Image (tube, rainbow, N blue to C red; front, side):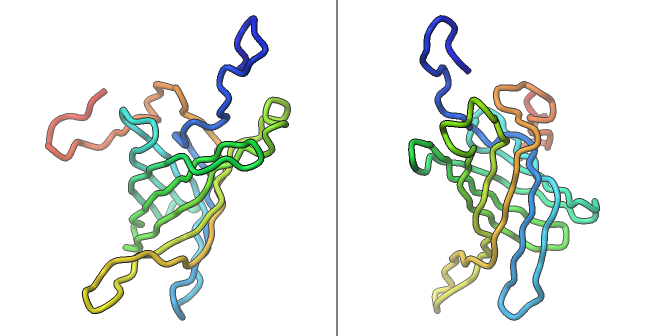
Length: 175
């Protein structure tokens, strides 16, 4: 993290990608329907671009699964800390489509090199709704979520970090 022989930080941005495994806890309610909760592990994988890829979800009880895609973009600088805006969409095995939007955080910038607490993402649970006579698709906030990184695949060529699904064009996946 620190450049040998110099006092300047080598990698001043503590979190460069959400690639890895995250513990996820989410709650939401759509309209008058029952409250829903999601608790489990989401894995963010990528191929090539470090800031987008595919994601998989497995609930804590191993009953509910999900697949989708993710992307992250630079968000803002607050009190000297740079954050990313992470967004991902999961199609769950029960047919539910859930979207997540949140900002990453590693805590206060001055304690990063001391405590090195794991990155977190806190944000909104969204659903897609059709609005207006033209049937336009929009997103509506229906709940919130919190995620904590348990395993980082940043800069790692681990098999876990790679996308394992077959390619859409029918060719074998790149390895």
